[in-house]
Structure formats: structure tokens, C-alpha cells
Image (tube, rainbow, N blue to C red; front, side, top):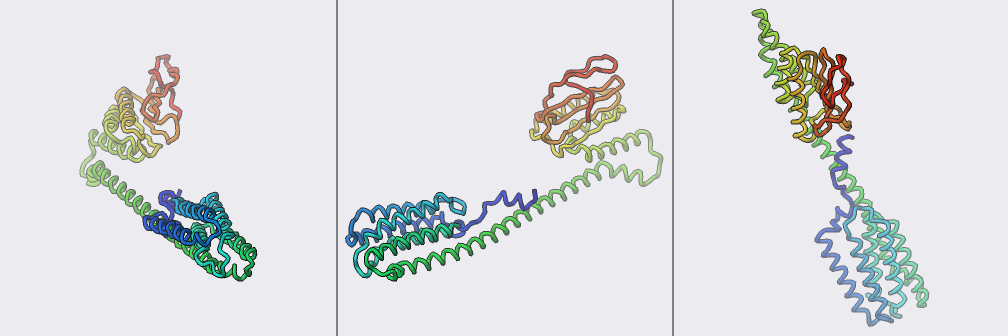
Length: 369
């Protein structure tokens, strides 16, 4: 997985709703004003209507739909909820349109058209422009049907709708602009986080290299300087010291996660006794639980101190395997193996038969690397 993919998983994507703060405190204040204004328009024009109950139901439906629209949900707005908005527009239009007063100019009595248009406006912003226009077409069809049924001209009905069509058209264009802006912001955030992650990884790798150089200087620097001087023939003790330093460097490369006390001291002691010690880290990291690593160290140290000849191999296995660590000891009398799980506890296994017929400790078997 690339740094960009990781960054994409870690950030909250920007969308139109977040850009305009649709769930913010300011949006809630505007929502309250919208609800209150709808009630005011309905109440102040109720005496002009042919019946008071349908407009009352309509204003409740419209305001409930407004509450639904500002719910915190990533865009696009859920399809089922979007159908709920379209249904609210349809019902409120049916409930109010055919009760409008028989006057040339209905005025504020047609408050439902403006309220519904704002519902569709924000529905379009929330990436449901197609459903918003469907709602507008339904609202327009009902309004034109009322206009014809009330002996008005179609033009009279269209004049009630044209401004609202323009508002919805603006919402559609604005929604496209917001989506494009949100996409640019998301791309920038992903690249910024990915860049920071890559920079941190590079810094960490540089620090690891610096630390290993310091370790190399501390462990092998003086010995290399002594060899470079060439002013005397190394003694047996110095040769032993060189071999120990070489083994420690090799352990740091092949068995990095196993290079810690008391394993290092036990490995050095075993090598001084002529035991071949191999530390292998195929996992690339210690076991998750520090206590498990302590148990691994105890088992490894026991095997290293118990060895009198031959070799001892301690291996951290790759992640995902049932056997997390194996400790294999070989000697003139045969081979023994101890398998440990990710908790540093022995795995149950049948003891192998020794070549000499001697019994092996429980939990050991021949090495199978």
C-alpha cells in the first residue's frame, strides 16, 4: 500500500456539506430561521386559504424534511433520504396548491414553493441534483395543474415557478463547483499527509542508519584501527576478540530483533566455548508483547548456556505463523528444537528420537528451517 493510499484511509474526505458547514452551529441557526419563517408565512396567510388543516400539515412536512437535510452524513446524500425529500416536496405542494385563494396574485400564500425550492437547493448541493430536478418537475407539474384547474393560464403558473427554477439551476452549478473544490482539497490533504509520512519514514531510516554506524564504531572501530596499524601480530586473545566483534556485527544484520541482553552475553559466552551461534530475524520486528520477548530471551539463554558443542540457532519466524520463535540446538548427541508461540510460550510437539537413543526434553524436535 502506497503512502497516498494510507493517507486516504486516515483523513476524513472533504465534501460539499463540510465545505459550506451544513452541520455547523451557524447552519442550525439558519435552519431555525427557515422553520420559523415557514410557520410565519403559513399562519399569516391561513385566512386566505380555503382550509386551515392541509397547509398546517404541509408546513410540518417541509420543516421535517429540512431537519433531515442537515443530518451529518457524507455526501452523496443517502438515496432513501433523498426520496424522502422529493416526497415531502410532492405532498406539501399537493396540500397547499389546490387551496390557494382565487385571486390574481396569490402572494405569500404560495410560501410552499419557496420553501420546497430551498429543500431542493440543498439536496442538489449534497450531490443529488438529478433527484432535486425531479422534485422540481413534480412541484411544477402540480402547480401547472392547479393553474389550469383554477381557470388560470399556463403562463400564470409558469410565472410562479421561473424564479425557483433559476435558484435550483444556481444550486446545480454551485454543487459542481463545490465538488471540484472538495476534490482539490482532498488531493492536497492526501499528498500533504503522504509527504509527511514519507519524510518521517526517511528520517526514521536515517536515524536507524546513524545509530548502526555508531554501534559499528563502538564495537568494531577500535579493532579495525588496531588492525590497520599493523604494528604487531594479533595474539590468540585478540583473534578471539575479533571473532566476537565480527559475530556481533553479523547478529546485528541477520538477527536485529534478537540483539539485546541477556541474549548477546549468552551468545558471546557460547562462542567463547566454541559453539556456533546463529541469530535470525525473519520477522523484522520483536514480538508485540515485551514480556513475550523476555520469555524468548530466557529460553534462548538457557539453550546457549546448556550447549557444550555444536551449534545453537535462534530464529524469529515471519508474522502470521503459529510458531513465532524456534530454538534449535545441535551437538554430537543429536538435535533438539523448541518452538515458541507469539506469547513466548512453548508449542506442544512430539519429541524426536535421538541418534544415540537418549531422551530429549519435551517440546523439542529436529530442526526444519
